[in-house]
Every structure is written in C-alpha cells, then in structure tokens.
Length: 372
Ligand code: 13P
Ligand code: SF4
Image 1 (cartoon, rainbow, N blue to C red):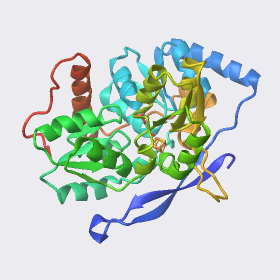
Image 2: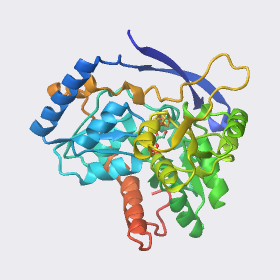
Image 3: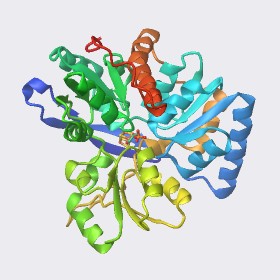
C-alpha cells in the first residue's frame, strides 16, 4: 500500500523477567501531499461540513500545518494534549473531529460520551500506547497495590481505567508533587524518560513502566552539544519524553505548550528544539523574528537519521477529515463501562489543573484514592 511505513518500537517484557525490552513491530500509513488546488478544495469542503454538522476540529501541534491552521480558522483548537482534553469536554459541538492520535480521540469520547468523535484515521496510534498493553499493565499494578497508579495521557482507555490519576506532560510535575506531599508512592506508566524526569524533579518514590516514544527517544545528547557549540547563543527547548542526557542540556523542559511559552518568553534569537518537528510550524508563526533549529536525531557516523516526526501524527490529513465528516467513518467508540472508569483519573487531572490555574488549592488529592 502507498505510504506504508514500518516502525520498530520497544515493548516491555514481563517485569518479573528483569524488564528487558524486546522490539516489536507496528506500521503507519502516511498520506500523499495534495496539490495546491486540491488542498484549497478540501479545506473549503471541511469548512462547509463543520458548519453543517455543528462540528469542531481539534488538532495537536504535531499534525500537518494545514490541519493546525484550519482548526484555528474554523473556531476549533490547536493545542497540547491537556488543552485538547479540556476543549473537547467544554465545547458545545455535537461532533468533535480529533486530528491527532488514537488516545486523544478516546479521551475526547470518554469526557463527552454524548458527542460523536471522529478521527481522520483510527489507526493513528502511539508507541507508548502500543507498548503498554492493558493486561500486562494490570498485572504490574497488582504486584504493587501500595502505590498510587498514575498514567500518562498516551495510553489506551483500558489502561486509564486501571489508574487513579491521568496526567499529561503539562501537569505531571504538579500532580506528583501534590501526591508526594501526601506521602504517596507512585506507580507510573508508560514513558520511562518522563518517569525518570518526574522522579528527578520531584524526588518522588516512583516505579516506572519501561515504554518510550519512538520520536523523542531518538534525540542525541553528544550531537546536541556539538550543535550548541555552533550556535552559542541558542537556547535548548526539550520535551520530557527525551532521554535524560538530552534533558540535562535543556534551558527549558516541558510539554508542547510549555515549549511554546518558553520560546515566546526567552529573549534569545535562536532555539534548538527537541520535540516533534510538527511544533516548528507554531513556533515559527508565533515568533517570526526568532530562528528554530530541530535537535539532532542521528549519532556520529550514523548512516540513517530519524525525521523527528511522529508517523502516526502524520496519518492525519485533509482528505481523511472530509471522508470522516462525509461518511461518518472513523468514529471513536469506547466501551461504556471502561469509559466511565477511565473518566475518573482524567477528571481528577482536569479538576486539579483548573484549580491550580484559578490559584486555589488543588482538589482531588484525598486520602484513600490509591488503587481505587
Ligand atoms: P503534549 O502533551 O506535550 O502535547 O505531548 C503529547 C505527545 O504525544 C508528545 O509526544
Ligand atoms: Fe506517541 Fe511519540 Fe507520536 Fe507522541 S510523538 S504520539 S508520544 S509516538
């Protein structure tokens, strides 16, 4: 099939066997770029369909720039995964079109079971989600009943249904600090680099699953140091799914939204960015006077190089949105009982972050939540 990309990703072996990772296989289907005339036609059609169907388009910062711009132009949203969850829940639309990856569509559906949630391609997944199968994860939780179960947004609905809390990289440190202040021990899944980062920053007693993002795991510290030498005035912005030696070189570490605000706030003219290159579109649009350089993904002497662009985010395209809206294809369904249980950790995160934003005390961290 055209545009099919094969992908290796890491999946944990049973922890009892020592936690070594075996490489598994996945695939993505990257759509062809439409011609300029076709792009214009597809965009116009999406505008019409969104109005006709009282639908809102939400796009993640990693999807194609056309989709990001269209989401904003049509009154939808381009954002990080935290704000996508909040926007989808609060928007009065009857239909939400989610341009991102599967867990983002599922989160939207879980928070708004009465809304129709469509995606351009339901096979757009995530190596973190693939690397944390619900049954293996449940067995891991069962081995550690004394720990509060905290999962990353990048997981299936079934994994979230086993958790006490869900977090995104936009709020993970705040939630873990609050839990740690209550003396909680944490079980974390699935991203090992984000888990290590949270542990280092908060001092939490945190036991981590062993997953990784196939995009961020590729950034290379030595080559980043060399690039910094070539650009001595550049500041380094890093997503915390990156390896620890890359994070150690950062001037700012955070979610996609946090990287955007750091770039706007810092007075440097040049930035090296260690996250999916999809974010460069927004960084450049919002900061036309600044230069953004993608962080290196190949080691010295490498014969191949990662493109630092998520193959599953790349499955989202204009034609897929038209198809979904015209035919109702690619509707996201989440089992009602699983969704109801998975809503608990997501709602906790949204309540907690809303209270923090409002300057109040964080709710939801009450005794006895652990292993709910
Ligand atoms: P954000 O929560 O920063 O948007 O990240 C989501 C993601 O998939 C990162 O790879
Ligand atoms: Fe998952 Fe990484 Fe793609 Fe984000 S960039 S969706 S973490 S594979």
